[in-house]
Image (cartoon, rainbow, N blue to C red; front, side, top):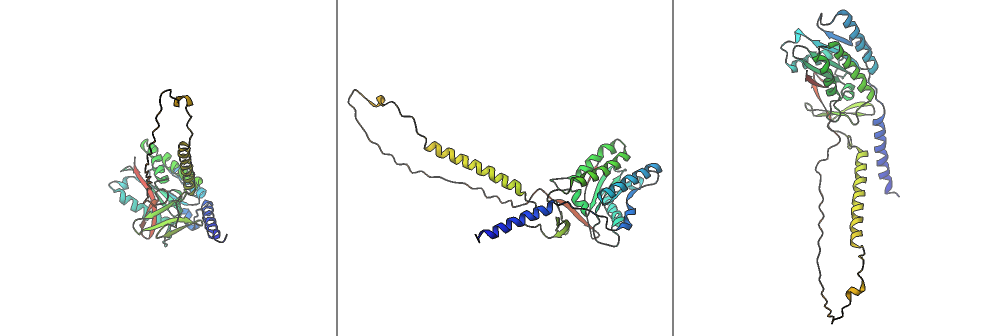
Length: 303
């Protein structure tokens, strides 16, 4: 009994950690003074004053609904000739100016960036926004958001594009955090992942993080069942009784000679086991990058 206690405690610890990760996690706008910066930023006369007011209200409502900072930054003539990387850098600087001034902490939020002159889209994410609007290969939410905007922008419906961005933010926030989401920053070699409702930055992921225990157990049960069935079939075939022939088949009216032959066979059995060298966790994590001491994620594209 004493030997079983450590195994029981280990299993209980795993289950407890899984329950913690399943708990809802809230984002927050830490600095209330910066909430007034939530809104639309575009060149003069790009939208009518009435449309600007309408979109500002929609963006502010979204920010309140998801409890994150939200902004939309649009370049028109001022974006002419700007490289995509330059636009991203300018957007990060703007986000820091609006929501992360005088601090290196990452403010939870997202920003839509449009360069109308080069038809470039960038969805920028920060803090909890990197987790909710994940860009991991197993659940590419920010990439999906970029794709959702393209039909609106191609048809010239810029107002519809901003509203769709807000709707997608609310949709993915309501959907909850992607399971075992994490980001990896190639620049500093750091991982970011969720633990006890907070984002943790570390040199590596915790043991078992991203492993789908349900799937692993399910696969093990299926494989075990198949092995058992195959073994049963082999044993059954070896010991299956064959139907005896009629005794008259062995009776001869002529002289019968009996011969005895003994054959001895040496049989060998070889078992092959594949050793899997891949010890990785779940689906691919998201990517992030550093900028001025801050971390940003997101996705980009052209329409």
